Image 1 (cartoon, rainbow, N blue to C red):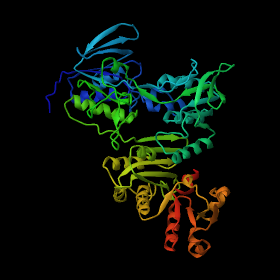
Image 2: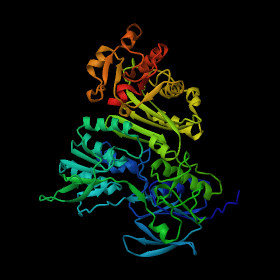
Image 3: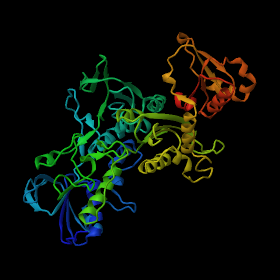
Image 4: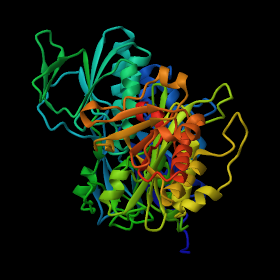
Length: 565
């Protein structure tokens, strides 16, 4: 390990997540270091990911996003007095002189500039909104949602009752969160427009996204999926109007542009640092840029995906904080590596939770994997427990060696633990067998006796033994018999719409408990697809039919819970 320079001068540019974390850790490792953090905004170390929940009213004031767990505001005085390093707000870094190792800072209140020398420099300069690819009129009622001012402006108008209808362009993380924020507390009429044919298109596969879309429609959100925006202008009442490629024009009181963010790299480009194909600053596994004395982390950098080895841009607060820790350790002379990302995420959409980690089916295929998938529907606690809630899981794995590749989860139940557990399994290059071997905590208030991840492993093994799990939208053949093995009351409350007369499909209802006695009602040469509520009964029915000599039997993975939402 290299000898530490305790009097090292470290400058940090950016004060939201990576920057404050790097400074706080570094001063603990090197108490005599001279650390100065420059932040263009007046606010520092605030919870950016909490902005939608402040906009919705779930969080009472913006100041709550700047507080420590013990109620102290994280401002410049807090970092100086508690953490031990200097923070200067209202200070924009406008230039980096790598040859002389100094930066130029412009102070926004006075307009004056000054130079500061460094031994090590940390870039935590974040991201900026993706610019619309269509013409847009300038208006305070049309804006992105990436900064505190965006949330404050919307919240003020919503509190005054000045927004009755909002239009959101973009169905990714922020677009979905803002749809809930506007509709749930404020009762605002929401229209959500997404250019792809589904919500969260780069994270979830279509059948999993449909579960979220169903929830949005139940909550009164108007969805326009697969629609392009051609322009945004003002109508005759000076209200924003969004023109679609279909010729339809939608007017509202407010428009949010939620089309994602891109790395803020202008400062890095001007000083000649390497920029990657994904548009972010290139860093190695120690978060060093192409200049070994300059580190970068957070939303301004590219990452490496652990499963594909390819570069990926993933702006997440959780990653930004980890970057800050790794940067500090390496500056302090403690070699620590960042392993790359697995793409873990979680999102709340009204009464539905959604999350994923690893590769979706589409992403895995694009990366060149030969894959299989299984989908199942479960509950987070035993059915008999009063607070039991459902969710659906989809697992992607490599069919050549059973290596786990990805998990998606959508439902009202507790999914976070499953995503986190699967993330650890992916980190350790686990296979299907490992799903069956891991030991989970069990008690009825927390989980079922056999965890849903165990069930997914069993389903994958069943598939290897000849049980065919399919998606309902993949059924395009004629002369199918849909065999519904649910109970009478289940069928009455939620009929299965599997019979399509145009394809000569037939729907039969035989409860699982009667199947052995009524099996002669079925022709063993028929092409049969079995459906139940969640999947286990369909699997058992497939076993019964297989033992009786039926060859063409398939199962709808996840049952009606996954197919119908």
